[in-house]
Amino acid sequence: MPWIFFALALGCLAVAMQTMSMGLALLMLLGTLGFSLAGALTLVSARIQARSQGGLGLNPVLERERLRREREAAGAAAAPRETQADDTRDRAEQA
Image 1: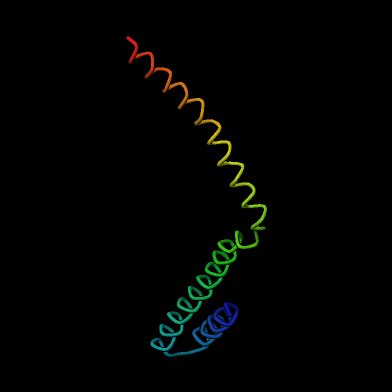
Image 2 (image 1 turned 90 degrees about the horizontal axis):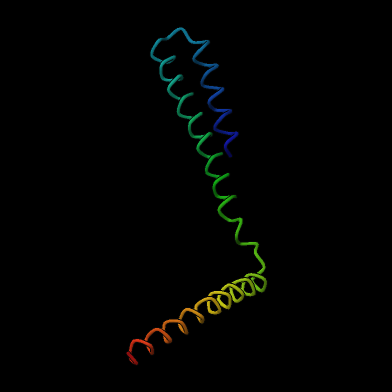
């Protein structure tokens, strides 16, 4: 689809170079600019869309396993802190 915009821009440029009318030349140059921008934005949009869908191909089983391991690691790291806080609280109550 973007190549159609670029072909139209090239056509407008060709007409602008061949015409003797200043108004038509200006109109064709504006068309060239518009079609060129539309083609470039279409290419950029397609590229962004292709990159944003990169995460859809992940294996959900492996992703769940990775998340489970992260939760377990976070829980294991939090357990010693809770025990240390309990010990500190017990010492404060004894004093």
